[in-house]
Every structure is written in structure tokens, then in C-alpha cells.
Image 1 (tube, rainbow, N blue to C red):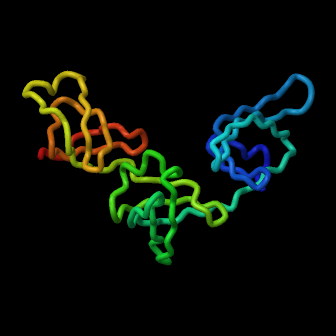
Image 2 (image 1 turned 180 degrees about the vertical axis):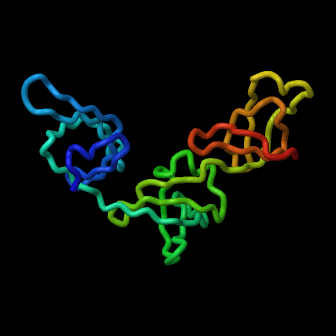
Image 3 (image 1 turned 120 degrees about the horizontal axis):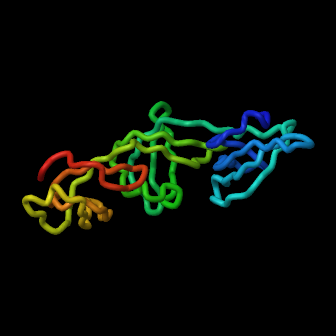
Amino acid sequence: MYEASDLKKGLKIELDDEPYVISDFSFVKPGKGQAFYKCKIKNIFTGSVIDKTFRSVDKIGKPDLMEKDMTYSYEDGENYVFIDDKTYDQAEISAELLGINTNFLIEDMAVKVLFYNDRPIEITMPNFVEKTIAETEPGFKGDTSTNTYKPAKVDNGYEIMVPLFINIDDVIRIDTRDGKYADRVSKG
């Protein structure tokens, strides 16, 4: 169990048998009366955000969380299959849970999967992945000094904005946290 004084932004808690993450937090000490903690908490399953107030004497549930090192194996319809590096157990994670990360998965990629009561709830990808440009308009010599971008598609069809000097078959690095171009790794 957590004490109310343990609360902080990013902490995962359990209320009514549901996991939540604290997205905003403030400590309020009125002139009269007892201090309290105002939090905005986000349901990890549904994504809904609610306001919750905790008194300093409240006890808050600690969720049964376990993080496992896993390797991406393959896509199976709407689900993506990951294999536990130690036990070789498989876990299927839905495309809905993965979100934009489905565009960055590469076979045999090492990831961390967070489980709540043996159910996958969150995936942590490497910060950067390398992808090959499959489609874009040609760049022009001398276009490297401007901050102008053009659309391009990588080998799996994901569309990204890249600088004008990027061409087909160039390998680029993409930041998985925001899905944007980071830099060019090599020319095609």
C-alpha cells in the first residue's frame, strides 16, 4: 500500500481493482483544516481521466505490476506476438494497445512489456529505430540548409516528414516517442 505522501506524477496506483497512472498532482494545505492531495489519474485500460482527492491519512493500493524483457516475434492478424527472453512464453498484444508503435516494430526487436495481473498493459520501445525510405520525391543539391520538410514513406508504409535531402533507399532514424524523423543514418 502507498501512503498519500508517496504520490507523485507518473506513479501507478490501483483503485477499485483498476490500474491508474497519476498524470497531474498537487499538494494543497488550506489555512484551516487538513492538507490533501489533488490528482488527475488516468485509467491505463480505458484512457479515461478523473480527478481524485486523497487525504494525508489515506492508503492507496499498489498494483500488481511486472516488467518483462521480451522480443518481438511476428504479427498475427490484429495482434502482435512477443516472446519472453527467459521463459520463452508468448504474449499477444493488440494493435490498439501498441498504437503508433506498430509502425516501428522490427523482427527480433528487444522491448520491455509491463504486465498488470498477467495482462500486458504497456510497451516500452527503444528510443530510436532505423527504417529505409521506400517512397519520396527526389531531393535537390543545396537543399540541406533550409528547415523544409517533405512527405516520405518508409518500408512498411508509415508516412513521415523528412528533410528535402532525403532520397529513396536512404536509411533514417525515427524517434519512437513521437514518431518523427531524427537523422539520416546512411545514403541509399
